[in-house]
Amino acid sequence: MKAIIGLGNPETKYNQTRHNIGFMVVDKILSQIQDIKLSEKFKGFFAKSKDLLILLPKTYMNLSGESVIELVNFYKLSHQDLLIIYDDISLDIGTLRFRKDGSDGGHNGVKSIINALSGKDFNRLKVGIGPYNKDMDLAAFVLQKFSKAELEIINKITDIAKDAALEWLNSDFEHLQSKYNKKFL
Image (cartoon, rainbow, N blue to C red):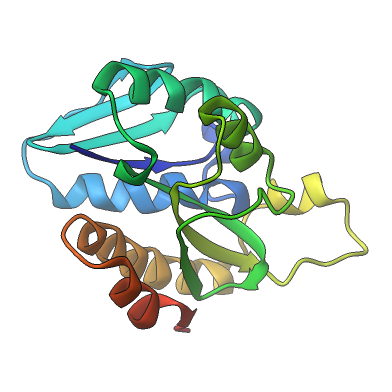
């Protein structure tokens, strides 16, 4: 079993905000898989299709680890069975980056997952939401809705991220990094 987990905030007021890019990618994955339905489980929205688990934590970004650890414990998943999809302010919009491990990079959702798993060795797919305007409060920036022009790019890059995440299920990680770690748009 493998799990794709998109990070975001569950209320509709957060739709199309920078911090919800993980939810946006997973929504595209769900729209591609036939006969899959979300239910509420593991403190999130959960779906299962054969050997694929999908999770969108409802715990709000800063407590994402609470949801992830419930899924990991229930299915006895290893850290390498996880792909966490989330926003990265240090990457420009239109950029993707796969990583096998690393620090939280100041991302509270990732920090929560690292704490819950007692380790940072899990797969990540970072989706760029920058450049971050340093004159703006960080929380205000990540909770800001995308502009109309940005949404055009976001729609395209979330399609590419969807394909990358689904390819992760059956592919070598180094191949994914060489194929997807770049600015696309």
